[in-house]
Length: 182
Image (cartoon, rainbow, N blue to C red):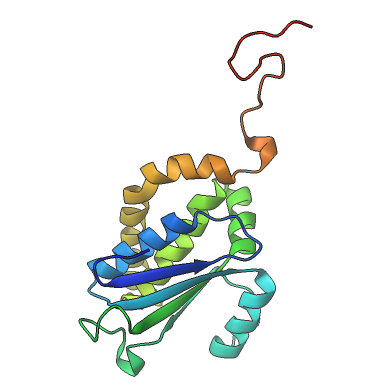
């Protein structure tokens, strides 16, 4: 997916995700904040994200999302830098945590994983949620972006729901909807 000066790729081995929607949302968030370059989103399991969380943050537990700024160095993300070919960052989200949390909260998996991707993009854009004020700002921005992508998510959600939660097909009717004999 490509935003004005942002390219996003999604790698989701083992998880059915709305990859195009995740890429589009991250590209929009980053472009809105003037962050240029390429970003990859990796959807991993809890074990993989726990390893990364321990290695880079010293936290020995799985988390929902990690962001790695590859362009800005110690001063933050690249703004207006060398252009879309330069690496801006990587977002790693736990598909396993998203699935578990979505079930616990009674929301669709695609919405939860979209939230994690947006959260990671906001971190790459320089937002910080370590303070109460920062958390409020992050949550407000997340909700704005989620609301923006809620309509495209509508048709995506149905495709990614587990089979048993999809509307059951009436077996007494054929493809045309006509009632079958028998």
